[in-house]
Amino acid sequence: MFALLARFFEMEAYFMTTPEKNEPEKNEPASTVERKKVIFSAIQPSGTITLGNYLGALKNWIGLQDKYDCIYALADLHTITVRQKPADLRRHTLEAYALLLACGIDPKKSLFFIQSHVPTHAQLAWVLACHTQFGDLQRMTQFKDKSAKHPDNVNAGLFTYPVLMAADILLYQADFVPVGVDQKQHMELTRNIAERFNGIYGNVFTIPDAYIPKEGAKIMSLQDPTKKMSKSDENVNASIAVLDKPEDIMRKFKRAVTDSESCVRYGEGKDGINNLMGIYACVTGETYEQIEKDFAGKGYGDFKSAVGEAVAEHLRPIRERYTDYMKNRDYMEHCWSDAAQKAYGISNRTLRKVMKKVGFVQPKCS
Ligand code: TYM
Image 1 (tube, rainbow, N blue to C red):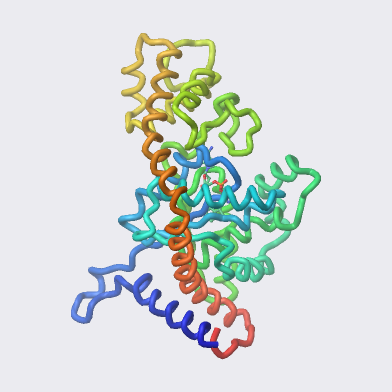
Image 2: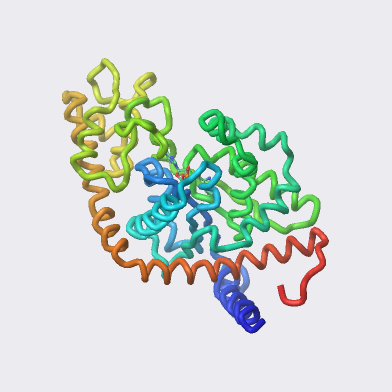
């Protein structure tokens, strides 16, 4: 009982310093100070984190930390929609936590927790599932793709996956959700679920916007540039892992599939080169025109080497910091435990509101 009360007061204290923290001071005109916008996003710790994940999402997450209230999670509950070996899931979760810290997620600026540590996610997901139509979930392309890929395990969790994702986002009243383009359909569903719920019960949820980067929103496979670069690709040359060694990065870029022309320019039917130009632009900050100028008269071989070198150089400090974090499990445990407690405080406020609105009788101290 004492522990429960203590947790309740801690939660409330944290809340005083988050969403309300930018409320106007007593004599300040209300219009000059606004609540900081809330950012929420998550990534599955389902194995290798790729250059696609990094450029499409993580790099953005880092940049948003100074301006917004950022809340980030490892979506380990989502990961078990595909069968996992328990030891692998544990290892991948630990590695992903260290890697995201190494990429620049700063636990002093942002909440960075593990989804399964915060029970409100699964609780809200149930309530939202009861407000989501079967037909809407059936239309999700990711569900269709994944069920085709794992026909022996088309489980109910795979089907309701987008509802859990909606719960993740809506619990924190997020304004923006930085994701790659492959999550656009899930984001549209999240907005629909929130709008429908608000339509029935009044304004409960903030309607979130997807925040998709101009550059890097869809990094393609190096072996089949018409397909998204994916963690689960069986061809090791198709994707770059953030933790790949420089020599592996160079080798994979040198083998990247391009076209029969040899002029470095962006154009229709040049998926391979377009993808490499996109990656190069992301890591160097150069525009497509600059890239075309720099490589005028040079062949694809030179360009592929330059992309490989630029990516290896960009990822080098992340790899070094990752090794340090992996040696410091106590620090990581401290960070994720602290973040989970705070995330629980914030999300439980939304959950309590939802439960009341739906008509559940409230316990005395929930
Ligand atoms: P996940 O783990 O598949 O991917 C994490 C992030 O990486 C982006 N991404 C890419 N971006 C560009 N090019 C690529 N090739 C590429 N591959 C992946 C994804 O768009 C994503 O932003 N369902 C989510 C995890 C999740 C979530 C959430 C995200 C759970 N709850 C709430 C946002 C908000 C997923 O499976 O991402």
